[in-house]
Image 1: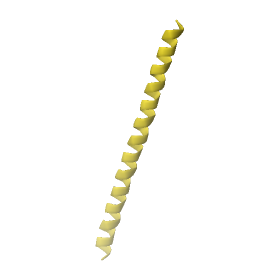
Image 2 (image 1 turned 180 degrees about the vertical axis):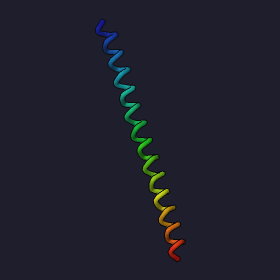
Image 3 (image 1 turned 30 degrees about the horizontal axis):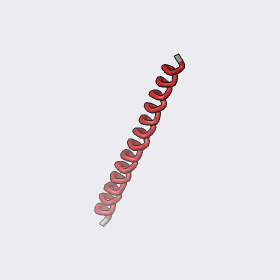
Image 4 (image 1 turned 90 degrees about the vertical axis):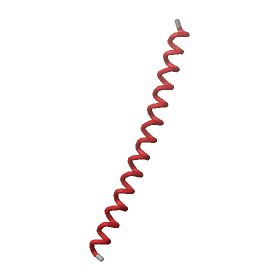
Length: 50
């Protein structure tokens, strides 16, 4: 019985690690997208001011 609990625990741990990695990767993508949008907006404002 303990084998099944250990296997289930290992599966859960692996899924939690995968989910954490996914969240980090997604956060980095969103941050990059926001930075690109900010640069684009600043460039547009600079062009309007010129």
